[in-house]
Image 1 (cartoon, one colour):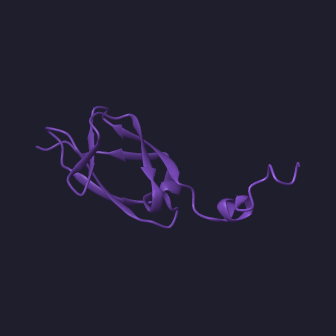
Image 2 (cartoon, rainbow, N blue to C red):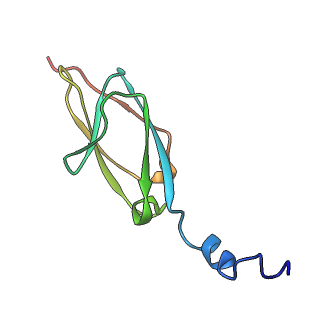
Image 3 (cartoon, one colour):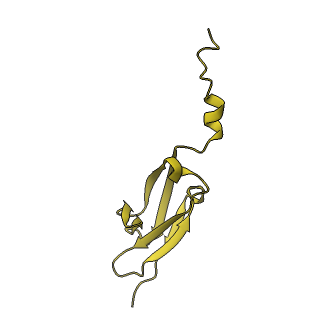
Length: 93
C-alpha cells in the first residue's frame, strides 16, 4: 500500500526544469520599472516576480529593461539563476 502512495513520475518530475522561478530585482535608485518585451514585470524596485513554465528554465535568457524618469534606460540579459539582479541607472543630464 505504501508503494501506491508514491507517484511513479516523481523521479521524472524532479529531473525536469522547475515550473516556477522567483527573480529578485533591485536598483540604484529605487523606484525603477522593469519590463520584458513591453510587459511590465515590476512597477517599482526593489521587487520580486515569478517566471512560470519554460520561462523558469535556468538556461532561458530574459531581456529586461529598467527605466525611470530622469535616468537613461538600461537593458540587461539575465537568467533566473542570476537572482538577485541589481542595476545602477545613470542620470540624464
